[in-house]
Image 1 (tube, one colour):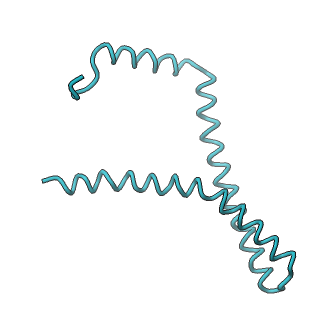
Image 2 (tube, helix red, strand yellow):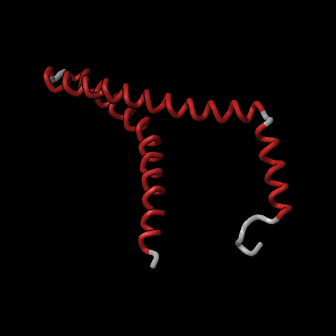
Image 3 (tube, helix red, strand yellow):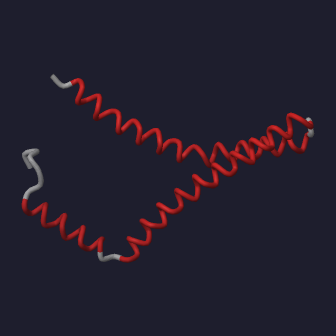
Length: 107
């Protein structure tokens, strides 16, 4: 391949693979479930973040040891749940920015 694109043989092979995947219901179901799980995880991180904030305020006002430990546990879970969606968001932003900067650098 000379870098200009796919050869006819490669295009036919790619089309056959794409058609097989399109007709595979388990693959389609898997793609939908991955997308749904990511949204559920993001929603759970947001809700847990709100609970963490409430626990922080309650622990600061009452200076209760169980509330402080509850806040610490909720904060840890929030960070663990929020890191993957935050990483995906940053990655999307960087991928969107890098091609724009590459275009600006061209003469």
